[in-house]
Length: 472
Image 1 (cartoon, rainbow, N blue to C red):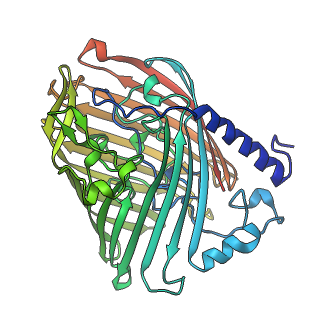
Image 2: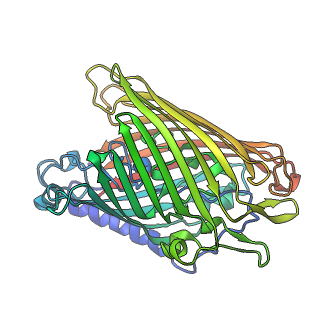
Image 3: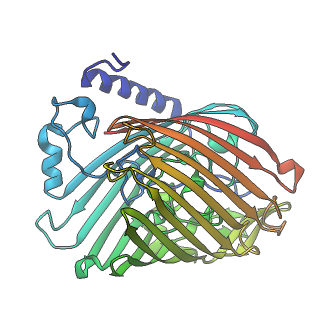
């Protein structure tokens, strides 16, 4: 018998108690916004199924945004249901059939910095995500409409950056304030010409559609999800932003995208030394009528294919942050004109077992990015990795992964304390899909952080994590 016992009520009680304990630990004053003098970038966004357990990914970059899929009735087999809370007596299936999909996840990282960094010790970042998607056609309204709303509550016993202040953000759950409660996304998308053209407007996570190398990823580090050159500027978790997107696919397998977003979070006023509004808090306000002239523009084109049942894709993009931005150098924070840059990414299935499930595959992926070294502390970045779902016979939902990444910093000491050097990271994990709704993932990371300024150098860090993800 497992620790939760054999009944749903006992499991629910234990999980609710654990969540209450976490909430109690997070009570108190919210930590201030990260200082621009920090050596690291703001940690990851989130709203992709990237952090959910295997098989519950979706395209809205929310760990709770699961594919609808079949749900077994309560009482048939609790351990084989796709969700911990089952089908709600048939209500969940009825809602889905009517065009309303509701999903939730709870993800907790039990992490220990065992050596190096600024300090060693234990911390526990967590994220609770609840979201809903509405299909207007299935609701009996009009064709091609989709609305999405996403609530997120996150926190941590300590900030991850207090332990290892790396550039990318070694724990993608950990926001840069200790407590984070927001209506993270709310947007509407309208499709035209049988989906060949889509227009989206609202509060959006830009990393859902742009600068994504590989969507089926369980890595804990931010390095797996976006280029190092975009770590400061991309409007993503926990600073999703107001904006609009144009997505088009003129022929099957060929895509083009353009996005225009609020860039206030990375605005810097040299006269006052103050930063712009956090877009995660302001929503559409700082995009539509309170913007200081700071916007984020991005365009991407790419293609996808399937050959011999092996899928792949490539993409290339351009981006620019307008208005005054900032860099933190040896003499403090400096105002710079907003940077711009280029990136390219790919993913390719290398192997699929005969008779396996559609998701079972060994996949290689990678990304390269460059940005203006006069205005961006990160001049270029390189990332590559492997992910293998179904690596062990009889464990089709388990996933293993390897990731390595490098960020090369600018040679300008006025905007970085690590002029001319770089940062290296490595990660390995194995996600055990205990049930369709429960994933447990041991993970190890190594972070090397050299600096041209001895006082800014941080000893190489080794970080051990066990991630627990529950789909409700």
